[in-house]
Image (tube, rainbow, N blue to C red; front, side, top):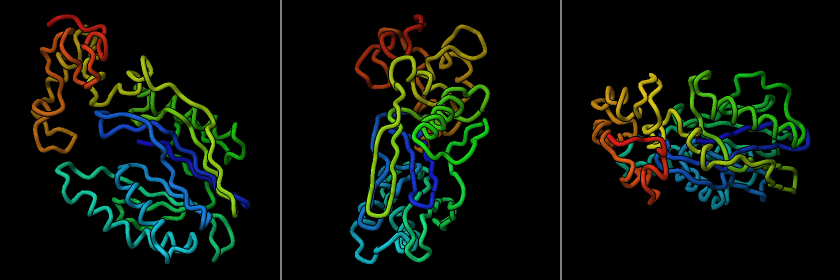
Length: 287
């Protein structure tokens, strides 16, 4: 999951992303660079969704001798992305993780900086993003004018983090963002990347980021009903027979669900190597 924000100006295009990454429903987490730069054509790309797909797409884009400018990049991506997407999931038993490609760069045909989005759900048909500030996930407060300074971008990223990644009770939607907030600035003949700010993504903040997802930390948190029991020992049991959201085809109770009889001294199911009590559920009492 990814913060992606894009704006085009007369003399530059800017992409802002976070570095925090987690697999669907938070089972695996880490940090990574999310923007692939193509300085030879004054362009860059990022993907909100599957990182393996992004890696393949970025590699292929750099290897295409016919991609000589941003306009050719958009045309090539629209044609090539469906095949790269199909190949990515050909031998994977999981359900495809919905993804969107974002491109930004200088159009030599129109003599301006432009941006485009190509969503897998829409067959990777290019959608023009030029002329507005694009932000995903979009904060629930007013996004305000187009960011023009580093401080503007940092403020926008902080509001996304607070409203879309932490405050799930009010928003009803969970998109974890965190780690470093990195600005990629694309100018003609110049590409610059720098860190604007950083959010902690470990300790108490990690548990807050995972709340509402399928991560063991969320399953072992106190149930929202106020029973005092872990969610895994309370209302989560009602979903045990439903198909697991990870796409395995198995029932949730036989797949990603935490054992409701897990003990504080057992190995933590997040695979950290620590015990449950020392890791995802320090509050958990014996069954």
